[in-house]
Length: 496
Image (cartoon, rainbow, N blue to C red):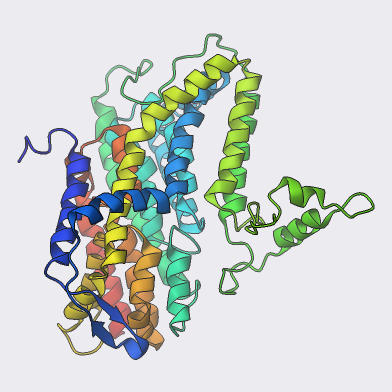
């Protein structure tokens, strides 16, 4: 068994999950939930060899924007790491955090958790992970602790979803379409409390590990990191100016926050913050015209409607797409290259180097999304959920937790999980319905810490070349402790 997972363990683990889904499709009939949570069982529809091949292509096509975004991250750092300003920024941030490593790690983790909980698209945070990993490694942290502080904190933020996270808004909307009386604010205080609890418990174990790590380090000289994909050397000049790099990185942070916090309303009209200034400005800007024929110049420049294309490519801030943000990344990358006086041939070569460093993690994401494709083609999860529900009569928080765990383990798309179970979940009303939202939301993020098809876990482990077994060894204490805490919370909410 050890030899089996010695190399390419992530590919093998994802493949095993896909194989389990395929095998289940040969024995378990698909099912759907209809109105009033009535369950309809279909027939057994096996996934065949040709389905597997087409599933890869379909996953690549269906999640092309996520795939391209990962590639773009590699290209960006392929260019950034060759500039003196970026090298100096990493070096100075790491030096500034020396002797306060634990405080710095806690602050970074908290910010990431908070943003992951609030942003309506979690993918944008992946852009900043290579930079933060380089800083943490230069500070003296090892790979596993650096992974926990960065990618691990994203997963903790997903566990404690409040106003955002990948798929949560879609999950709530699908329940609403099926008649569920829920909104993005349902049990918000409880979910915020879960976020705080998860962060505190996660930080507790991180601090213990980092303390032991720092105590073992006798040489406090500069740490040379050779196993960081985008590690940088010291800048050629000690007084290298970093103001331009700081401004460009700040632009990326600002647009990530402004673009992906739902300022006004969700797609189904549920009011979130009620801030309309960005919608009003967008309407004003796109409505500006010049000339006698009232030509809308900004609307045309920023992706206005064409004869046979009506999608809005640059929507108001708060409703951005990964594509929209990708344009900002490309702009910043080009400006960074120009400021550093990078030759065109070097620019192209650096892009190619960055591409090669992230192509493997990007391909792993496609494999993970194949699980969603298979379960979309053959919806056997509703059948399994229905059978688990027969374990008890009526609502039971422990049975609901088991159902959510199974659904989340095999599903890399939370919104689709909500879609496939929307009629079933909408059948619970009042306090029970609200608690089901809490259970499914928190358990989904919780399971993403360990399931081999967790896209953020896969990207991070593959990017940092960390064996899955090593991560499980690091996270298991938090995982068990958090599971106990969640079960206590669910029990109190259900029976008090």
